[in-house]
Image (cartoon, rainbow over all chains, first blue to last red; front, side):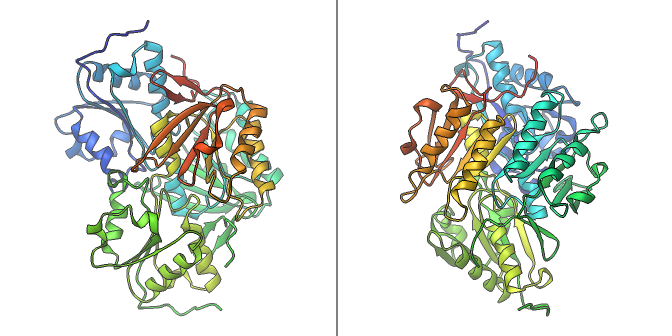
Length: 257
Length: 257
């Protein structure tokens, strides 16, 4: 069904990235959208990152894991009903977050862009937050892979991991492990070991710029998958990545000094 | 030469990302550092993105292209001299920017981290800014490759491009073309065409969130390398990327709607 009629009553839908979560890393544009919204929709742990003062007097729709479609549905419906709405994502809304699903949902429902002002506001992604804490591991070309096989067959993920290691990309791993998914990270380390020296630094960052932040840099051969959970991001160095003084992870780009 | 003595007179060195350049996307943490600094060092076009009010009364060291080492040198020296200093990068300081070169320079000069408080502040990278303007092209795994062969042999770049296309990553291209480098982007398109359908959407974003912003989405087969310059970032879709209504680029992640 395609609704071609404009909806004069619809309000803006902001799909925005909170960045890592700390207010000091939230873009003013995203803050503005949050303040201007009467409805805020998001995954409960991300909503919890927002200060109470920002939520006061607003309708907050916070849902649990795997309720992505319901979140998008609620946010779109709210905007169509004429309520300015923010759909909040952690990091950047375009990286393993809800910008794509929102476009898909609008397409599926036949809601034409002209009838719903959609505003995608970028945020500091987890990969940049983790990298800043580790030093400069993303100093050269990198690949970003989610290890979650809930939506993608493991064979496809495995193929991308192999390609990334073989071509000497720095490799960023999102969603490395959850309570239910416990085998993928060990397999990723094993694939990396086929292409990289055992001493290759691996950065393991949990809760970047959030309470209980934890940073670990470990040689690939000594990495323990149990160091990772759902709130962890990993950066596996390339063949040139090294530790620089102060235990910082550094991938040089090739400048002559 | 390694200086093991702490320098009690040294001041903090902030290596920070401005994000795309618009003040609405500058993190408060980065703004705080800029305000607290008495010296601001950076590439001239990035310094020009800052409001005059922020620069007033400060020493500004703005240099031209390819003066990366001199910028880092000036910033480190300034902090060692006791002047709080910000070294500004566009986007995120860790992605093709100066965080890595700063670590390398400190290492080379033997300046121990304890003697110079170094503060790396992440920013919204160009890839997220461009993606937000295009729709949601980074909805699944992606690889990020710089086409500049000034510091990296073209054979290595070519190998990474081939790996990324063959493994069906979405591929982000930084530094696609400059006045002197005019052949790499056409070669990248030709490599992509070996693995992807001619209709694959390619997003070409110039000056994201800056004056003279320009957004173009073109099928791979019709891409013209002359659309790109030094301030352009490209996103080549994967085999599943499509145009969604409203001319938005969408890479689905696999949700069932």
